Image 1 (tube, rainbow, N blue to C red):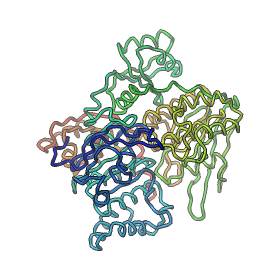
Image 2: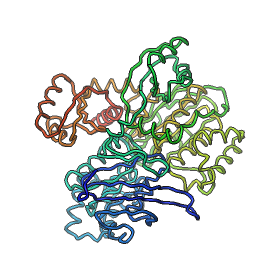
Image 3: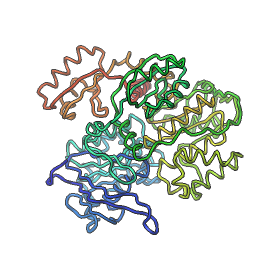
Length: 626
């Protein structure tokens, strides 16, 4: 924790309530401090109070109970003084931008708002345009920017007066991995060069790993805090990975095993938390005729501990009972050289794709790659400019990227409407609502729901009628880890138990492991198709495997190796270095880090992540177009 002199943000006993009688407690007795030059993360499920805390510190919400100080300034008595030294970026893709204004006009508007002198504005503007790479797009309207570009413009507008304190609410939600990497590089630079203080909320656990300290929230209260390593140390169970076939049978056995406390499917793997002896679990699988191909103990991740702590306060819902299938027909989806043009712009360019019946197929790509346009053509909502889409099967369900339910109806009213439209038994509807954790929000208007809860409601409406094909366009954008696990359990059950074909787009690269195959898109083209393992192996053959560098001072370690290994990236609480000769590079890295002031250093081989695989393929495609 920072000492008294370095406390930039000081929150003491913060409490926030809503409702006419203040009966809804959003924040309950929250206290923490954030020091100068520190990145502090607020992590928690939807509705945990993260946004309320950030908005109170930013003086957007009036302080009700407790005390908050920013650089020694009392938020309650001097809110305008606090606003002058902070930069606040609200949740959502560029929601603080003006759609009809260009990039340049939005920046100028925030200059006028902050009353920046001309010389300071010119200097800050040039520097921020350079690091965000938005200079070529100054004349483009905000409404025409991709998600990643919108967030970078929003960050410019937040930073234009170079504030001492940055308050970022879910800043990278809905942003592709390349833009996320660039976004974090900008934040790290501001912290490094200006000793700025950053308070952010995020639902990406690898981003939580990049914070100096984090606070885990549940029901408006802090349930754990400290460095990521300290929080990881609170894991109480053991964790393992099992590869077995048939997987559905193995999963049933694991769910019934008394020593298995949690389980989740990641493609061909089942990841479990357990007590007792792992060999007893393996024996139980073998005894019941399951072939066990691989069993391995693994270290607990920050997400594992997050889920463990949250579920100790609120047990995870049981797997949802599936609605009856509208048809027993197995559905396939074929795209034959599908193209879609908007005037002179080609959004989807000659995509040739076959999705098998019952397959979970993931569409990955940067913002603006054409994923949503392709899905809308598959659904029949857009007509191809050329080529043909064929769906062999029955009904389909569609969950759009943008929230498209009835905003003036409550959760229960939305579901009753859909159940009546599709002639679905209301008992089935109520059961799935309970298992997706929607009952506490049943009387809330859809427009007032947290982002993750809205997404759960939208998913339920998409699958309520038992479709044979379901199209899910970024279904977990803005959704916390517990809800994402519920989502993917349901998608897995739809595929494996009900034979539903699922086509899913996502920016969460760890979700790629849930898919049978992936299609990587860039600039409207399908640049690679294959299983997650095959794509990762192809990337390793091209650029080498990964060496992970851990250090007490990771930024000092990065400074020591960056010149020799310019492609080095931050990945969670490690540096990842690509290597074609791991033995030679391990020796070279150790020499570079010796005496670099990074403290204790550890270098180990590490698996190539899907983030790194994705970035490799996209950069390769962009280089080929150049």
